[in-house]
Image (cartoon, rainbow, N blue to C red; front, side, top):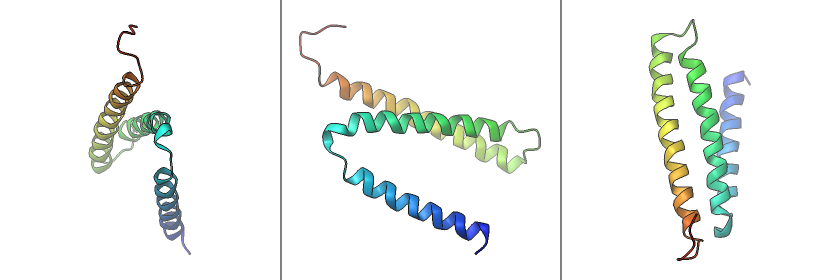
Length: 97
């Protein structure tokens, strides 16, 4: 097996494992899980910025890096907004900040 076949194999196993783990999460734990995926998205933003800003980056990697930055940032902001909205559901009606 070459390194690309191994990488595809690891990706498929990680995708299957991730799907199975998330599918079995109790609804009570969805908010912490959402916050965790937001943290992973933040790491993806940093990685995409590093790839896009590399000195020897090709035009293709710059375009794909820019798309990755935009997509990850959108996911990050949306995830935090949804998490905030979900947490507000647990507050009592008269409770203020």
